[in-house]
Image 1: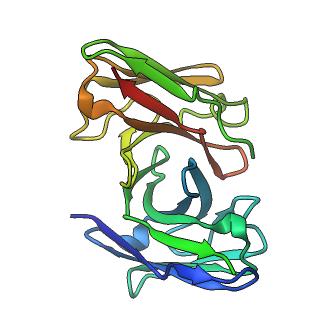
Image 2: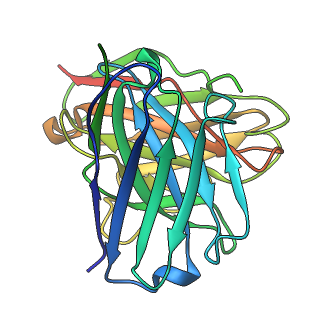
Image 3: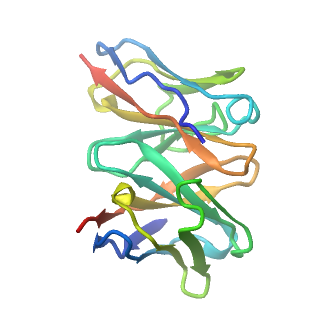
Length: 120
Length: 110
């Protein structure tokens, strides 16, 4: 059974940093792209970033470029999102999602999310 | 990139069919058959319902179907049931190798 468990959320001050983790199990982690998606309170889903299975390819939404960095440790089956220079508008539930890109493109499994609150 | 355009809300009575549209551009929806749809109940994680425009993952009811014409994709729910009441989001791969979601549609079962 595929399981994704996010952690690392919490309250952070504007301008601060936070690192999110996503522990994966139940599938071959190193051979799958992984994606971060966020959802501000009461708002819709926003795609944030994607990383390839070996970590060599990454892409970011304009809102994350230059401030967020996605990485992975395939030996630990763990995905990360390093977030710097955080702003109030980064307040959201952050989901990690297993991403299928072989002959298609979709997010087939999701974690339950971790809430990041940026506030003084 | 701008969110894909979806109606804010759609409603229907039990047993009826409803359709949710998702309009993008020639750089996303119109460029690839990589449109997917997600169902999200309050306080829950999204769930994949349709991928590659019209394919259903194992376990998803065949009451859910997808299609695409030009820059607009659609999700149809037939035989509407109370459990279908949720938010629905479309997503498309883009020519920038990124991805974009729709703004979301709230489905209400009357």
